[in-house]
Image 1 (tube, one colour):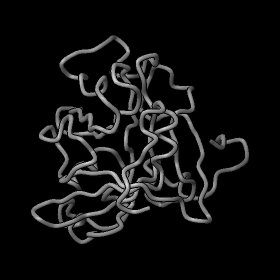
Image 2 (cartoon, rainbow, N blue to C red; image 1 turned 120 degrees about the vertical axis):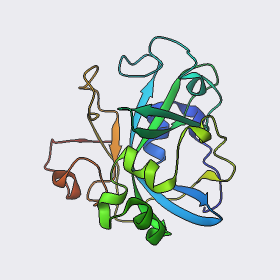
Image 3 (cartoon, rainbow, N blue to C red; image 1 turned 60 degrees about the horizontal axis):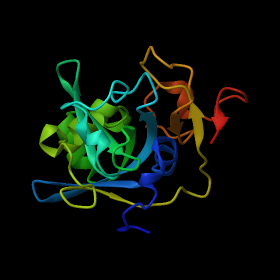
Length: 205
């Protein structure tokens, strides 16, 4: 279904974070098309103490309270941008953080922008934003439209989805709201996630 915008994004953060796995992000950068495939996400919403929306709407997080399918981009550690896809009915602050992607088209451009090669180019939320030139200029952007858009795509026949605890948070850290394609080499959490995990290490979504 390449070219079709995902229709599930208003169903809430967890449903969106799961269903976004395998979908494509299309970035037009300096007139060139780059395509990456989503392999890792995390869900957040206003009922979650780990979410930026937990304390209500603010100037920083206002995009998360808007319609589904828009970009919520935030700046962190004084140097990095991270991309979220808004994912709920308008007025409810929710979204899916895009944690890692796999290059599909334009890998040479990604490697040039990142000044390195291989999985380290896009195996983290800040890395992928640098690779794709995503910053606050795209805050609130409608992801139906260029230069940054989402396209529906399916998992490969051998792939499945698994849920794990989220990474790098101190609140609600036990909640299994991180969704991955086990075995994909571009996952962000080190070598243990690049191969099928042991039984009981994760739950299947």
